[in-house]
Image (cartoon, rainbow, N blue to C red; front, side):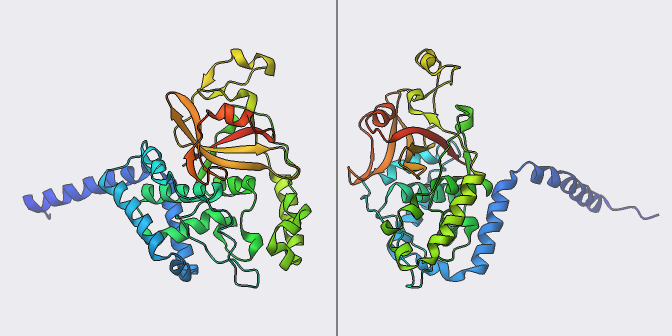
Length: 328
C-alpha cells in the first residue's frame, strides 16, 4: 500500500484544506461586482473605440481620484463622503452631451471639467463603481456608457436615457443603483411622460431627425407602462431628513423623521407637464440639516444649497417632491 511521506502528506492536507475553504470564501463575496465587471469587459470587447473618447485632462482627473481612493483606503462607508467635496466649484455648463456624428448617432462624451445636474450624478456614480471594483482609468468610458445608455447599448440619439425615471429603472435593473423611495412613501409618481415629443422643437436632434420623434414616442409609451416609481411629497421633507408617512398628510409635522445617508441621490419631481424629474443632486448634511449638493444653473457651479433642502423645495413651486436613490 502506498503511504505518503510526511512532507507529501502535509502538502496534500494543505491542498485539501484550500479546496474545502476556497468555495466558501468565494460564496461570501457579493455577486454584483463580478456581474458588473463582466458587463464592462463585454462592452470593452464590443466597443474598443470608446477608450479614445476620454481626453488627457479628464483621464488625469479620473486617475487622480482613483489614486486618492487607493492611497487613503476609501471604504464602502466613506467613498461618497470623500468623493463629493472634490467636485465643489466645478463650473456649471449645460448641454455638454449634445455631440453626434451628423447622422444622429451618439458620440460618447467624457467631461468632468464642466457639469450639469445630470452629468454630476453620472460621473460620481461611475467613480463610485470603479473605486468599489478597483478598476482603472481605462474602464471609465465603459462605465459611463453603461450608465448613460439603455443597457449600455450606445446607438442613435434615442438610445440615451433622456428621462431620469428611465435612467433610474435601467440602472437599478443592472444593479448600479437602488431606489430607496418606497421606504418612505408609497405614493405613485404618476407622471404621464411626454415632454420631449410634445416639445420636439426644443431638441435640435429631434428637429434634424423627425424619425426620432416616433422612436421617442414609443420609448415614452413603454416607460409610462412600466413606471412603478414612487415619490415623497415635499411637505414630508424636514430639516433633518424625511418624515415617516402618516395616514393623513396633515399629521406629518408630528411624525418621526428619518435621516438620509450622506451622498444619497436626490431626484426632484416636477409638476411641469410631461416631465418627470426637474433636478438632481446629492444629500449632504451641514450642522445636522439636510442640504442639496448639486450643479446649480443659478450658482453656475457645483455647490451646496445655502438653505436646507426643505426650504429649497418650498421656494420652487414646480417642485413637488423627491425620490431617494442609493449608489450600490
